Image (cartoon, rainbow, N blue to C red; front, side):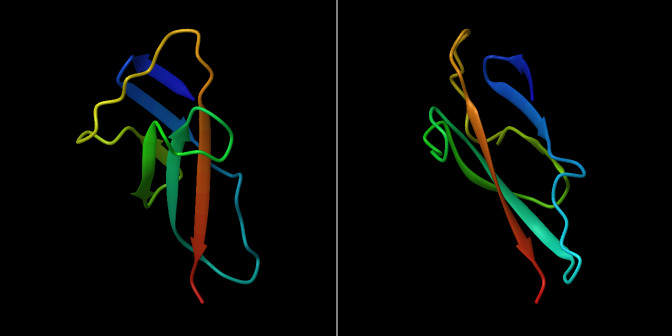
Length: 77
């Protein structure tokens, strides 16, 4: 995870997810103040293995606070 400014965040999960039986279609990722929560940024669609902040939703990140990234993986059937 890389926080450039208090309203910008970049995150990569490259090589973390795979499914030998199906291709990965897309991802959704979110930011929360606790594990599994999405109270900082709601789940956002991402087609690559890298996410960046939603430009339409200015983040209010505070220095010294922990943030948790959740990633959902959607596979083709």
